[in-house]
Length: 295
Image 1 (tube, rainbow, N blue to C red):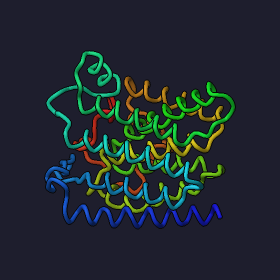
Image 2 (cartoon, rainbow, N blue to C red; image 1 turned 60 degrees about the vertical axis):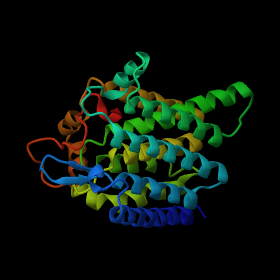
Image 3 (tube, rainbow, N blue to C red; image 1 turned 120 degrees about the vertical axis):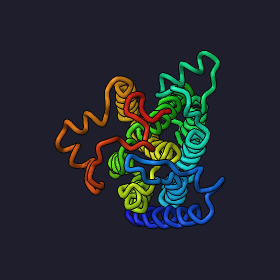
């Protein structure tokens, strides 16, 4: 039964992603230019991949979720992250220098609400809501509350982490697929099919640099994967995963992930697999490494 859910989630997610991408291509909300960025090759790159991927994840969650609680948590986390990510993609003030999680939190502390700050608050809120929906009650009220907080932080943190990786073609898709594969041994493994299906449908255009996930797609992928771990993994594993996510997020404020990947042969090979030959400059449509894609 679990294998059938895995297959159903993969096929339905891939189909939904492809159909949504075609529909969005035929009538882009607000016009095509609003969704277009220019890359380092001076070629147009569309961010319509993001909402299409989010749609595929939602359909895959419904098809692959083991129960109503799991499906509701995944859909809530994914739609919330996608919505606030798209707002940041389309409404961000590019004339400001506010970047990274620390930058946006600092702006909020000064009473300045950037689109990135709105995204931090929005994804944090919907992640906690998803955690409250998806976390079963184990033991007393205090233990349940602790689980909800850990799970909410894991969902929001993973949403940001995958977005931090969306700096090169295909990188976020590969990372999300690898992270999602980690729950294949858990009861909720059927939902991994959704991530694999979305990655399979999105990868050709992403790797060819015709499309990019943007914040809307990368945040949605990360939130989905975080929710998978939140509803499937034991408490000790979830706490360890959250510690790793927090550590990597803090490291991203000082260390370039791309530089680390380029210095590590096996990571460099995986990162470049399927990509077009590198050009001298970085992709303009993807955020610079310092501070990450939380902006």
